[in-house]
Length: 116
Image (cartoon, rainbow, N blue to C red):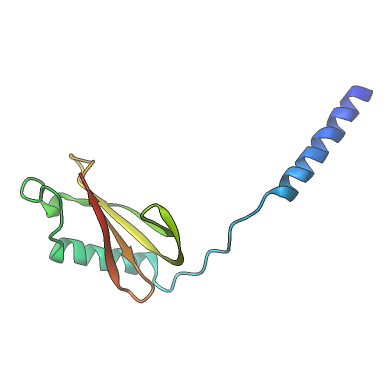
C-alpha cells in the first residue's frame, strides 16, 4: 500500500510540475481574411494568372488541386511577425510538383515558391 501511494504522489508531482513548466506559444491572432476568402483569392490567382509552375508545359495548371490552407506565421523555414494564410496547390499525379502562396490580411497574394 505504501508503494502505491508513494508512486501516486510522485506521478502527481511530476504531472503538476510538467504542466507548470510547459510554455505555450504566443497567441494566434484572429485572421482578418476568412479561410474561404483566402482560398478563393489563391485559387483565382493560381488558375488564371500563375506562370511560374515548374514543367508547366508537361504538367498543366488545370490539373493541380488545392491540398492545404494553414493560418501560420512560419514561411520559408522561418517565423515572421505577420500571420497569414499559406495555401498550397499540388499536382495529383506528380505530387512532388507544388506551388505555395501567402495570402496576407490585406488580401495581397505573394508567391512563396514552387517545387519539383
